[in-house]
Length: 438
Image 1 (cartoon, one colour):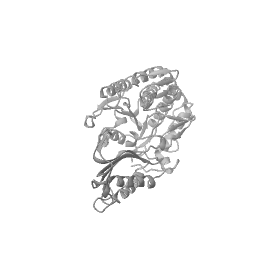
Image 2: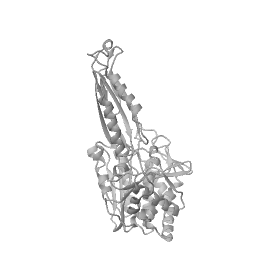
Image 3: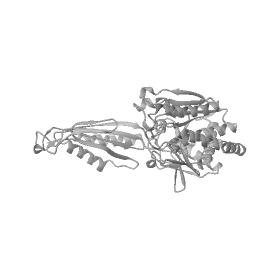
């Protein structure tokens, strides 16, 4: 397992990577750049085709159709492909493509085919105005999938793919992972355990002219609070037989959560709260209950999320929450359940070393230096499931914004630059000597 650290440069990173990874000679870099430019129009067309296929998470046929287009591209590059069934979690299958090289680090590239836009959503089509492309998933993350293909095509054209050991794992349910999530991500974790480093292609973030990549992402857990009290007439509340009621006990707990749990890089929220009787909460959040002004409510439910940066932080905050929940008001009893959901991607020396290597590749490609994106600015993602096992870097997709909303957009002017520097990064990793596997 990886050890979280906060320092940007540590002895561990030097031991794992050495002071410099192998870099391509200038002539080979130029071959990569030429190939990216030659293929750029075709890659823009591929992006348009992918975006125009609806692949909402629950549209299995659409997700598979997107995967088939990617599979065709990967097979043409010499990758062996196979589909991994996710029927057990009622989701579309994942696509795994493997290039069986003989040397260098084993590199895993990850992404997802699905979007948050189901067939019923009015936002469905790719449009373009100059270098601005708009459409469902164009930034999150079909643009990132095209960066993967464009980078690999450039490596093949430059003669750098033949001996590389590269795997591509593309899930079909990142936006709404199947349950149990540990089963839904079992094969992704297995692929990571056979790799030395992973690159994830969520959309690149640019703020005030500064480009960012992620060496850390917060996890996303869900908590549920269930309170039981004694039903009775409101006139008897607080007496020895009736007690304080479920509503006041829920209010006590939530107030103490609000007042005492706060830590840096951590947030917690309440998305649903209800008190009364016969409470039923549906999976989509729809809630029914009964209640009157003159009764003491016997039930209360609150549901929220909890986002943390490290597993240790999750354990610490959970312990505080359970202590609060256990101190019940008279006549009440409360229970707390926490679903870890998406684990955190903690900052590590290895992740920071990958960021430095990205910056070296970006400089050779004529790009700017990337900064580490503050974890508060990116939500949970698939990369978090593999971060405990290997070094990872995220946010390597196509620059843009507005993800998960009508008007989602991407900047096509960044497609060739991003493809060039990612191709160089993959080449450098693929030719670097392997460290001992942890």
